[in-house]
Structures are given as structure tokens and as C-alpha cells.
Image (cartoon, one colour):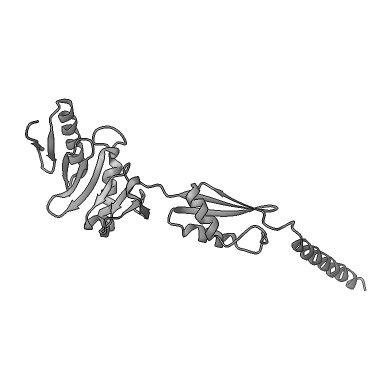
Length: 237
């Protein structure tokens, strides 16, 4: 009898807790009321709210937060997503959004954003691509490794000033000339080549600065040489 009494009390306690939990679940106490999305822009937040599979009024505990993070991560603009419950009635979705770094010119004349990690994000409207360098050509569209090299070239440039990242109109690659970039401000085409790229970029930058200081109207700067840089000057300087 002494052994049975604790067992009976334990069983009654389990039944009590189970009944209490069932009763709570039938109330609004543990129903989801708020979904907070942190770190996402308005457009991304709108898509996430449409795509996640949990909604206000659902049980806070029945659906997996890992599943919601997985769904959020499927959005092309989301680099990383974490979801957590906040007692008693909130879900928080924390998002790290991808940031456009360049634009790829598609074969059909359309454009797509590209981030610094070489991930193609989403389509880019032509009227919104002005601030970004454009990667042009079949090679950079299809060859991931070559595209990564192109991004490394852009990353090595300063953000502002002559021959800066913001001054690059487009960057391309072909087997004959290697990498070539065109500057937006001056229209100069710069041959960088395939090897010793940091050295060639540094030489080209110095030449571009010299041309600007002396108001020389050049059309092309070829730095793809071992010991010299060739400059083609436009007629009528």
C-alpha cells in the first residue's frame, strides 16, 4: 500500500498536468498573435509573410520553427534566416538579406543581380541597374569560376574616385584579351589580361589618373604587358 500511494499520486498529477495543458491549448493563451520579421526590406517581408506556413491563430508550438526558417531561406533575396518563438504568442523571423554587388547581362537582354559571394539573386529591372557594374558576355554568364575572378577584380577597386567600382560601366572576358573593363565617366576601355591582374589594375589606375590630370581624351588603355602600358588617344583630344 505504501508503494501504491505514490504511484497513484503520480498518475493523478500526470492526468492533472495533461488536462491543464489540453485546456490551455483550447484557449487563446498559446495561440500565435504576432509574426515579427527583422532585417528584411518591405518587398522581401511581403513575400515571406505570403510563403511561410504559420499564421496568426495557429498554435505557437505545433509547427516547427526550423521548417519556417527553411521556407524563408528559399527566398532568393534571403541569405540566412533564423526563426524563434517568443513566449507567449510571438514568432520572430530574423533575416540576413542578400545585397546586390553587380549585375549580369543575360543573353536575352535581361539582367540579374549578383551578390559578393557570386550568388545570382533575382531579376533586375533595367532602370535600376545604374549603380552596379555589369558583367557582360557568355563566359561570365556560364563560367562560375571566371565570374568569381571578375568579382574579385571589382572587390579590389576603391568604392569612389577614378577607376573605382562605381566608375565601372561593364566588365567582360574573352580569350583574346582576357578581362576588359569600361569606365563610365570617361568611356575608356581598359585591357587587364588574364594574369598578374592586380599589377595590371594598379598600372592602369595610375595611367587613368595621369590622363585625367592632363585632360587627355583616351579611348583605350592596355595594361596587359610585362613592362609598359599602351594608350590609344582619341582624335581631336
